[in-house]
Image (cartoon, rainbow, N blue to C red; front, side, top):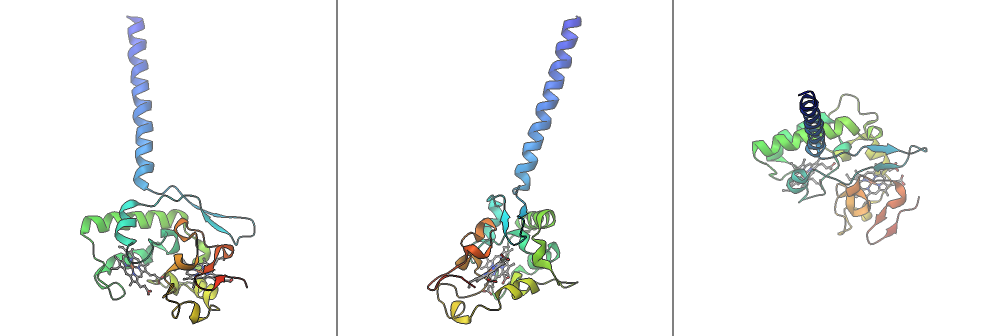
Length: 188
Ligand code: HEC
Ligand code: HEC
């Protein structure tokens, strides 16, 4: 009798440990992106610790341009982007309501938890729709001549991050990995 009680108590304990840890795994899968931005010592090198992207996001938002890492815009901007998908920079990028909610949730969670804060410098209260409208972004790119961008048919637009930043999909934008197609490595 005494042994039985101990066994039942033991298996209950085991069950709850298992349930709890499966719940934990479920949670991390649900959040889809366990990564975070790391700033190394000189504060100039940004790495995303994870290449895992949310598959739904990658599929719905990665066909016309790369699926921009959520860390590149503040949450308020993502909300605006998601609200205007029927008129999305001259395209219709609408998704159904359930898909839209899931993507927005992913973007907001990821942006809030691990934003690339340096990019949001001098932004104030503005809520830009574009990464390329962030003051820090403009400051970093304003010396690139247009023959490297618009007049370069391998790039076409400054919004095509991955044309020049070889590790953009992994959230890496450090200056050492910039290669301008048709021109070569960026050296300044
Ligand atoms: C049908 C094509 C298409 C789809 C699908 C699409 N986009 Fe876009 N997106 C565009 C175009 C076109 C631009 C403007 C690019 C340019 O100016 O070169 C753009 C630009 C953007 C920008 C601003 C980039 C910058 O310049 O900083 C963001 C952010 C963005 N899209 C997010 C999304 C999200 C989120 C989704 C999925 C819900 C999505 N896009 C799906 C066509 C699309
Ligand atoms: C035409 C090529 C090109 C495109 C397209 C481009 N970039 Fe850049 N980017 C550069 C160059 C060149 C630099 C380095 C500028 C310098 O030397 O100061 C840079 C610098 C940066 C930096 C600063 C890195 C650091 O070490 O401080 C960030 C962040 C960045 N880009 C993000 C982006 C994002 C996000 C996009 C897309 C929305 C993008 N870039 C599109 C060429 C490009």
